[in-house]
Image 1: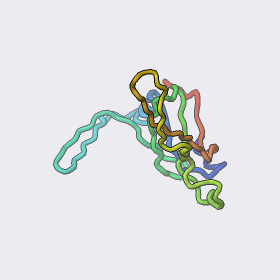
Image 2 (image 1 turned 60 degrees about the horizontal axis):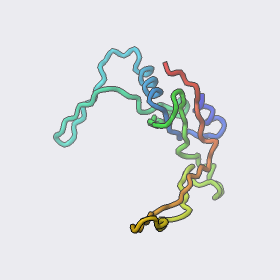
Image 3 (image 1 turned 120 degrees about the vertical axis):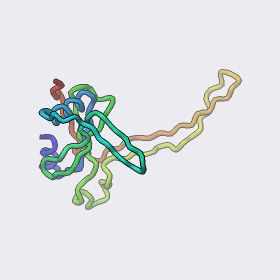
Image 4 (image 1 turned 90 degrees about the vertical axis):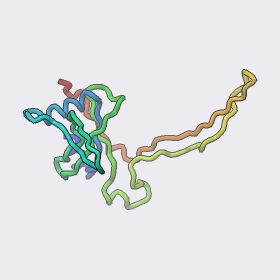
Length: 151
């Protein structure tokens, strides 16, 4: 629903999905339900053999465009919340210079400045700080699903 809504209203298809621990476990359980095969992966590279056990769904196929959307873990999301974040915009958004190609960027206000802290001992403390802000140019490109079942 969320992906179809972003596609229909704003023509945004390049997204990434952020979810918490329980949601990723639920997605993996639902995708692999009914499978009796034991999941494992063997990778061979330059003489080394690595065996990995366990399972996790790492991407989701966009229902309209068929693109692979990465599913990423976010440690601070509460249970029952899934966030869809825009990672790229269609070409028709770039007709003017008002919207940059990347929907997000970090703008630096103050570049690495030394600060001498107040003297309260004989030791001189100096800190190096920077001031930055996270700018989102396309807020309509993001959406969140809340109250997702965690069974």
